[in-house]
Image 1 (spheres, rainbow, N blue to C red):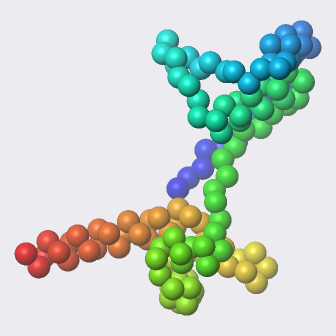
Image 2: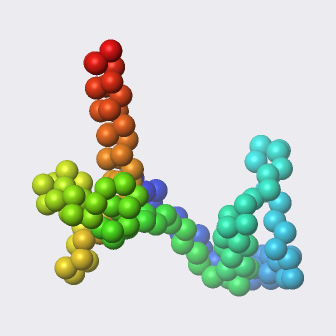
Length: 131
């Protein structure tokens, strides 16, 4: 899964920052229009947008980027529904990519999801071949 490159937005000019900060004062209500259609944001998205706008309202330069979740081997094994030992063996064989943080293995959630999808496709193919 490729991440989108970060986007950096310079701080707003003082007048614009002051107007935005005033608009946000004592308000968490953000209305979003996309192609003229009103959308209500889920709480987490609303909070992120309010935080972004508040930072711009303070005249701060803002960087927006994605974060890909890294899992411990225990978390990855639980997500995949397999044993911790089996998962470690698969990473040793290179079947699932692993990154090291010191001596600790970390696995991208996307790698586990891709492995699960591959398993699902293989099972479907085996079932179709058996019919």
